[in-house]
Image 1: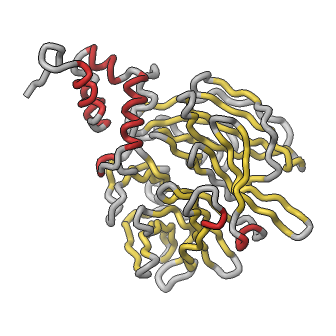
Image 2 (image 1 turned 120 degrees about the horizontal axis):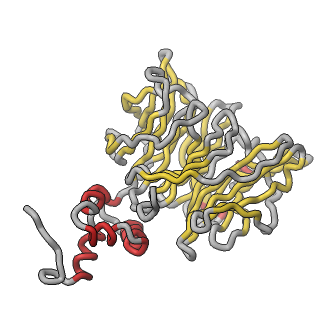
Image 3 (image 1 turned 90 degrees about the horizontal axis):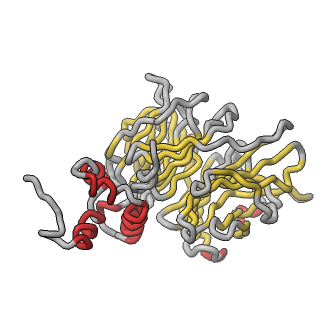
Length: 374
């Protein structure tokens, strides 16, 4: 059945409201119906309104997905897939990378509003960044920022400036032994360029071996640490994307002075810290129940590294129902396992991977980048 919306049959505003509630796949198909629909759906106002509606909707069809990157032994190449948040971790789609990595795989810096930031620095620094929207199969290769010639390492963060409707990447460059005051650079998708920012540099390092980031409540967050006479001081280091300033959130006392073998992520909308304790061969999962309230940190689960059937190499993420996705190794193969810490049960998902190359991010479909030329 061919249905034509026009002002003769349906008011334009009503037509737009109907289109705004359609899934991404249908909207992409409708861009081929006629020029007026193509122009409407690709307009930045429609893209913004569609995103805002999805962000505020609690309908099942708008529930977050999981983006999985893994590297199986055969074929030994990185693979990406989107999965539903259900008991079987059902595959939703299998997007193809827009370009090939120089390394064995890209680093997924983070995901925000349907965009995924890829950095080609997993083993070798290439200074290459790609913003990728897998749901609409579009990407943008970013200009390379200037990097120092001296020995250095870098950390990155990715977030959204809601005031300017802009996506920003923050880069922290630690040179030589001067690791207490990194150089800060910022990329704006609206301007298409990098700039140095004058915000006071944080007095903390981001671990080059276990760094992670997450965008929550308008800020990018990392685990920051500094060495002192007694050992370590650890905090959640935040960067407000709109104001372009850093701030700190205290960790619970149990984590504040430990070795910073920690990764930060999100559970629902709550900051989550995974503390890998080598001494006791386990991972403690802490959740901040109320953003910014230090007393709301709660130790939610303890995951033992060694079990009768496999060894846990990493905690990858968590479902809305608190089940955990684990990267495991056993029987000479790596596999992703869905673990219920309350029942202490495990479900093998049949996804095999080389340990150390698996990454899971929350993902929400959007039309962001559809208004940009290929």
